[in-house]
Amino acid sequence: MSVDPPPDLILDRLQSLGITLPPAPQPVAAYVPAVRSGSFLFVSGQIPFRDGELLARGPVPSEVDVDRATAAARQCALNGIAVAAAALEGRLDRVLRVIRVGVFVACDPGFEQQPQVANGASELLQQVFGEKGRHARAAVGAPSLPRGATVEVELLLEVE
Amino acid sequence: MSVDPPPDLILDRLQSLGITLPPAPQPVAAYVPAVRSGSFLFVSGQIPFRDGELLARGPVPSEVDVDRATAAARQCALNGIAVAAAALEGRLDRVLRVIRVGVFVACDPGFEQQPQVANGASELLQQVFGEKGRHARAAVGAPSLPRGATVEVELLLEVE
Amino acid sequence: MSVDPPPDLILDRLQSLGITLPPAPQPVAAYVPAVRSGSFLFVSGQIPFRDGELLARGPVPSEVDVDRATAAARQCALNGIAVAAAALEGRLDRVLRVIRVGVFVACDPGFEQQPQVANGASELLQQVFGEKGRHARAAVGAPSLPRGATVEVELLLEVE
Image 1 (cartoon, one colour):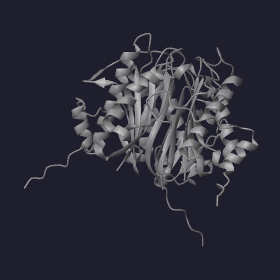
Image 2 (cartoon, one colour):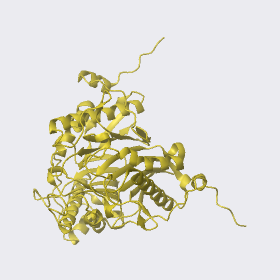
Image 3 (cartoon, rainbow over the protein chains, first blue to last red):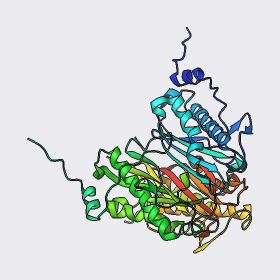
Image 4 (cartoon, rainbow over the protein chains, first blue to last red):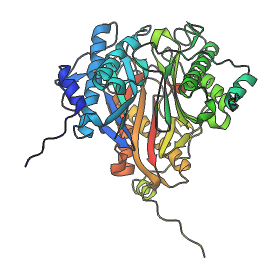
C-alpha cells in the first residue's frame, strides 16, 4: 500500500502564488549552500541567478534601475528558499520562522534606496511564509558583489 | 493593593547616565524591528534617527567627520536598545549579554577609521550593560546606506 | 604523577599542515575577540595581521591583486582560529562545526571576484577542520575596511 506524503502548506502556497521553486543553486566557491546548527538553518548568500543567468548585474542606479534590482532581490530570496527546501528534504513547512535577512545592494555612492530594493526579498518571504516570514533585517550598500551581481541575500531560518 | 514593578537595573543605569531611551523606531520597510528565537534576540539594522531626523547623512570623511559619525553610531545603538526594550516589555534586565554588533559605515574609499566610528555604538553598549555589554563585532565600510544614513548598526542579544 | 593533556586532533592537523597558530589578535577597539552563547562562538571580524603588520592594504584590484588578497583572507581566517583557540582554552577539537563565515573584500567598483578572495579563508578552514570546516558563507565588497585592510573575516562556530 503506497502512502501519500503529507501536504506541505508552503509548497501549496508557492503553487497558488504561481511561483515555481528553482533548483537549489550550487555555491560558486568553496563553501556549502546551508548549514544547520540546533534549530537554526544558515543559508549562504544568494545572488540572482535564474536559469543559469544573473537577473541583474552592476550597481544601482547607474547600470540597473531600482525596479530591476528589486526583482533581483526577490530572485535571491527565491533561490534561498530553494536552498532551504533542499536542506529540509523538500519540507518547507519545517520552517518555523524567517529570523534574519541580510541584503547587500551593489550601488553607486549616494544611493539611498537599499530598503526599497531589499523589499523584493522581504515581501516574497512574507508572501510565501505568511506571519512566519516576518524577519529582522539589515540592508546595506556595497561597491560590487560576486560575479557582478546587483544583489546578494542571506537568510537565517528557525527550523524544526 | 497595587504592586510596584520590580526595579530594572538597566533602566536605572540609563537614568543615572542621563540617557533617555527614545521610542523604538519603526522599520522603514517590509520587515520587523526584532525577532526572538530561543535565547537570541535579533535586532534589525538601525540608522541614526533622533526625533525623526537622521543625525548624520553621507559618507565619512567627505561629508561627515569622524566625531559626528561616532555620535551617529551611538544613536544607532541607542535606537537598537529601544527596540530591544520594546521586544522585552520594557525589561532590559532580561538582556543577559550583547553577543554581536554589526556596524556599517558609509565612507569614501580609503577611509580606515571604521573602528573609531563603531566605538560610538560599542562604548554606549558597555556603559549601559556593563560587563554584559562586551560583544563580538564586525565593522566595515559601505558606499552608502538606507536613506543616506552615515551609519547602520545591528545587534544580536542573548535574552531570558 | 603528571598527566599528559589529551591530544587535540586539530592542533595536530595544523602541525602536519605546517601551519603555526599565531597569538590571538587583540581587538583594535572597544569590543572583545569572541563571545560564547549557548553552543555558538561568535568570533569578531579579523583583519590580516601577521607579526603585527597587515598582509595587504587597499582595494582589489587597483592596489592589491587577487592572489595577495586571497592570502590575506587566509590570514584573517587563521587569526580567527587563533581567537577561537584562546576562547576554547586551546582545545580546537571542541569546534564541532564552522557554521558561517562572513567575508568583506575592500575593492574597486566593478570587481567581481570576491568569491575567489574569500576562498582563501574557506579553504583554510576546510584544511584545518575537514568536514566540520564546511560552512555557509556571505562574501561581499566594501569600499574600505578598518586600518585600510584588504579583507575582513568573521566566523561563527558551533562548539562544545
